[in-house]
Length: 412
Image (cartoon, rainbow, N blue to C red):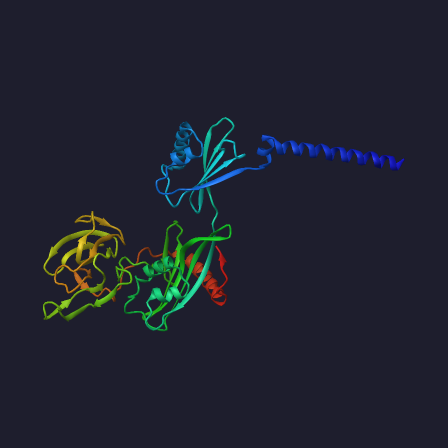
């Protein structure tokens, strides 16, 4: 009796299994099945090349003029996209099968987002922007200046990416003269971000902290977000590390003549005060403004040649001379940002060769750009300084751990 019951149960199980197998086969060979479980889904990706337009690419995919118009309008209204970028954008077309109409288009305008266009059963296209989560890692690199090194050479040897080195240079230029402050044996370090997606590195992020053993002492800077949401760089005591003016406007330019109130003029031949610093650079090299301000003079004379004078606040002005030409749109009254190009290196006026003559005037008196104490931007409030001290200690602990294990990283 028990044996008969077992046989009946076995037959029922086998029957159910057969029915399920039949259903699975039906699903596989029907459109419903393909859509339900994604079997044989067809994908094709097109990289945008020079001369490609959205209309051309969509038409090549078999879409009608009406479809192209609707998709273009949907992209514009839903994602603000009005054109495609050659050698950058990619489009992926998804169909339920090779011979079916396109149901989904994915535009990838950059590594951290994608725009998805989907067509519903009623033929209506919808647009959605999807942010791709970044896997941000903090990595630590150290370097040492050797005989004959520039900062860039030493940094490259340490494995620091060129873009990060440029950012570090810009930060340190507020405190250091890279022509005179560099010596063999000096050590430096940088903690910076690397961004990953799906386990692959995509790009570098921001400089988190930097340290350099300069002649005037160790220079440290930390990137910190204040309670009001603004971000800046601060020294180890929480004072603003970004100064209102840069000591060296042109990155990596060599000093050819220093501030000297009793210099023998190379053209005139007699002793005459040199109230600025000369930076050797090739004709046409862009000249950035050392700080934010307003142009108060743009002129040409026998000595300075083509020159611009910028007022930064009630106390400070800077002057840039011997320009080959002025930057377009920069004239008297123009408001400029720190780093904005105001002209180009030349050899106009009393000059023996192409260079930038750079002056800082404080309260109407010329001062040495390399030694004058410059005002900082955005010092911390008392409350933010408490938060900063905790943050600095955390970063210092991270630096300590990573310096002992250079192949490690810290998840941000």
